[in-house]
Length: 344
Image (cartoon, rainbow, N blue to C red; front, side):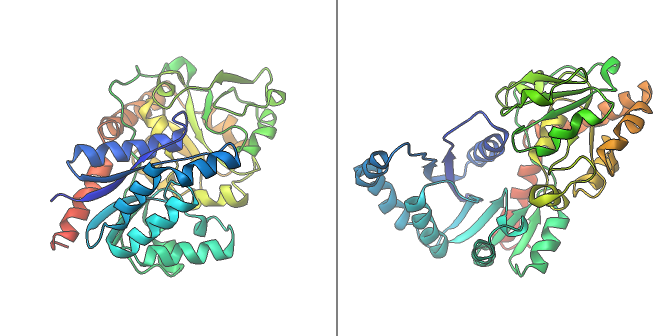
């Protein structure tokens, strides 16, 4: 079955969020789906740049092409890229076609602006199908009023042409954290935990570094799996080391952070909050463990034997074989084709 899709071109490639979206774009193209249009993420540096964009002939040619799309089965990633003008155009396209949205983030589930949440739920209810992260996200969306049929992705893929070597067992008592360090405000208290921690990503505050907390640099999504080394990958968010709190912290109860896929791609075991949506996946597949508070880390990580660490690494490697070739996305898209084709 040949479906149609909206392609994407991010303004900045060097972050994990764009890696997830670019990988899905690659998989859609690889499956032979028909590209309707590439939406280029625009970031205007001045009012003049905005005016030039609006007056540009190519801009309006793209808008006209998109406005002509009608009555098709179309896959798009959600939320969509694009400036205000392009988003308005895409909303018109969404209303004229049978939409399948691949969900990345939902403000409706992060306790952001109430009006934005209502609009988001309304948009999701006008879609034909939704590919959501997991069962907990699906249940919460139903509770929030979403009636559209949903397919669970299970795990974001992480496409790589090669894979890093197995992490060193000698470094098993180390914590590795990769991400937007400026957003991860809990890191301001990470020095209170008696465990070695190595940070990777943009936005480092050097004041949080200590004899236990070091900085490994910032790398592209393709490079970083080869830079993390050994240890246990940490998935945590919010403003506290005692629990995952705040809008970003509590969102972990519902989403599948792309960070999990990064750590698996790097071959690392992982640790996360006990209440995180991904906790069940981690425990079920034997790729790590959970803690209620980061203060529990020294005891939890210190109790891991070399054999236990090796087993978690082996289990992570088995899942890595799937995500580096896009297996999870392919399985979800197989379901999409089956449903749209009348088989489900």
